[in-house]
Amino acid sequence: MEKIADFFKRCDELSKDSFLFKQNSHSVSALLFLNDPDHHYMYKATQSKAFADCVEFYDEWGSGDNIKLDVYYRMCDELVSEIKNCKELLDVDASRFDGRLKINGGDLHPDTEKHLLAFDIIYCSTVYDLYGGVSYTKRDMKEKQAFISNKAKAETLKQELDKAKADMDALIEVKAALESMIVVGDTINHVRNGVGTVKKWDGNHITIAFPEKEAVFGFMTLIANNLITVDKPGFAEKIAENRDIIKRHDVIPHTLDRAARALEPYEDFLN
Image (tube, rainbow, N blue to C red; front, side, top):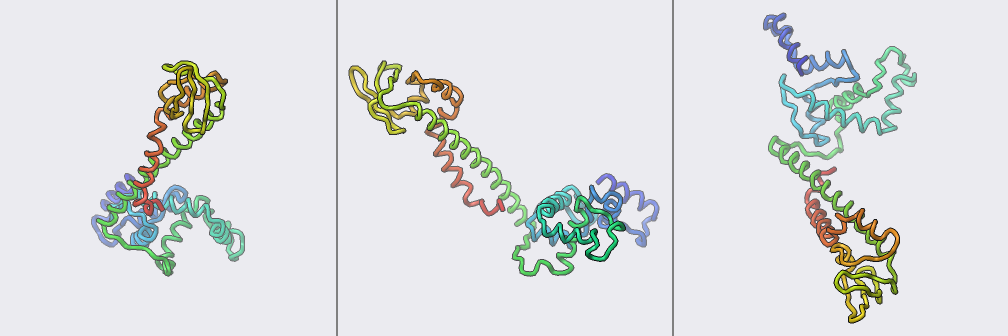
């Protein structure tokens, strides 16, 4: 952008405000591209805006000569990323260089970064009406801003859901590991009731017989509150390694449910 601003300034000084030599963002972007095509992109406003609408890229890069090339380049980078994952398109593009089009490939810029191909797609989609049959919405500025806001909200909610899922997976894993270490008949030491014996055990509730009484407990509640110890190899270590998850055992399922319900209205903005 600094190069463009400097170019405009010195060009105006040389042309002395003559409109015969007027430069614009398109011409200057073309010069940048031709000078270093592997790091720059060609820009043409009408075709680029149409492409942005079609792929729902709504970050504004401005208009006229006041464009933000970093925003436009970001859209092009996303396009190039998809190009490089499309084997059929890459094969067609390779035909320009390997003789299938009866063109001497050595005379062409190799376009290894596919920046030229990206502009070909952006430009030709409009010129040759390649949008035919593609359903998309042209949005005004207010609608675009709302879309961007909702997309950002969706991405934040997705991250929260992913975190909640990871916590749930960790909880399931540690719960299963601890459950596997206890069987009916094992000795349990309870901080208040003393030593007891496991009488019943279903994975969620554990019945312990103490000398003076028999009681039923929520297993994870006992673990989370450090109310029992079990003399089994790895039992205490497993609890210590997962203390945070265990403490939140009753909250994690609700957090996951809330996160899933919160994301549901915004899921369309993730695609």
